[in-house]
Image (cartoon, rainbow, N blue to C red; front, side, top):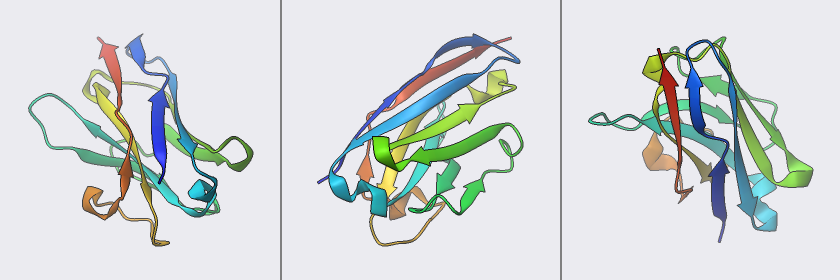
Length: 124
């Protein structure tokens, strides 16, 4: 079993930055790919970014490419999402998820474990 806990969300002005953290329990977490997803009110959950178990491969949604960076610290069992140049349309609940089969999917349905999410609000 893996438990994921997100933190780092909050209220920020447009153009500002936040760094989200996804802390995991379980020693096998270092072998799992991790994705970040977000869901705005009234919208479907959407893919934001993902990172392979080694950290060697990263993937981004076009809407965040060049502004967001995903990374991981194996020693701390934590995955980060650095968000810069935030826009009001980035406002959403951000959740991290772990995939246990060695893939790095963009589909939320391929992920096995989920955190509860953290709210990010960007004011204009």
